[in-house]
Amino acid sequence: MKGTLMRTWLTDMFGLAVPVVCAPMAGVADGALAAAVSRAGALGMVGVGATATPEWITRQCRVAAAAGAPVGVGLQAWALEHNPGQLDAVLAAGPALVSVSYGPYAKHLPRLKQAGLTVATTVGNLQEARAAEQAGIDVIVARGSEGGGHGRDEVGTLPLLQSVLDTVTTPVLAAGGIGTSRGVAAVVTAGAVGAWVGTAFLTCTEASTSRAARARLIAATDTDTVYTRVFDIGARVGWPREFGERALRNQFHDRWAGHEEDLADDAAAAQEMTQAREVECYDTACLDAGQGVALLHRELTAADVVAELARADDLLRRAAAG
Image 1 (spheres, rainbow, N blue to C red):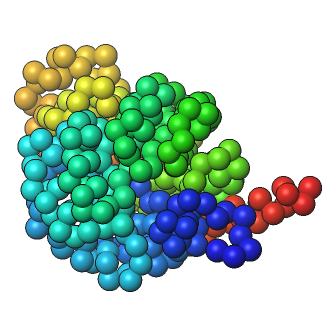
Image 2 (cartoon, one colour; image 1 turned 135 degrees about the vertical axis):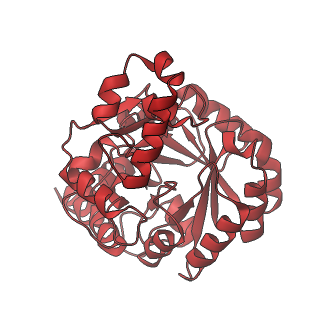
């Protein structure tokens, strides 16, 4: 990292060339993507879905570890209540970073800390950031409402980042709407130790994203996402009510938005969602993406994406030179 303007707590902690973490997107970021991101000099993470088995986690962590570089794992705290074996598998794998977010994460900190693991959690407002610091979290992910997938829809990335940085002393990663080197430069300049990036990696060749989903994502514009609970309700997913998701708007959403109570009782709609996922019909099926989706123009390798994000160093140098 000698000579770079992007040397931060994150790069020093994990020996990274670029202060970027690939968000642990369940269904997209498995061991192959995590390994590719870490090989490229950022921190790759395996995203663990609510129903993932401990055996799946073990396999994906082995694939990720083949990179010979630090990797992480992301867990959903609410899902651990019903699937505690996930935590056991992560502890056995011993990744460099474990994120536990969305639900009662603090109860799992003693075991993770006892194992010597670095732990992150995602926050969507200042109150959550204060609570995370008090709980002893090692790094806070300040996720603004622009971010794709699940989270809160209360504060945008820049207002949230500024207030969190002014309030806590814990290292802070910025998340939500960061898709190019310009975004990385902005948040590092503000004082974040790095960027937590998801959408920019959705169409990577190493991601688990299907061909049909890639085409839909690449065609999306900057106004094509929506924050909603429609897809969770339609799919009968157990996400807590306070965490909706940002996804591509489609016909199913438009039909049911504002009628969520009716949707919860409509068995035919639930079956429609199941069938749509099986045949990859994204007029009905959910496709998570953040507001940075319009920055996706083609399929790239993870190394290509990391290289673009790394150009933040050049932007910072030009700014410093006037």
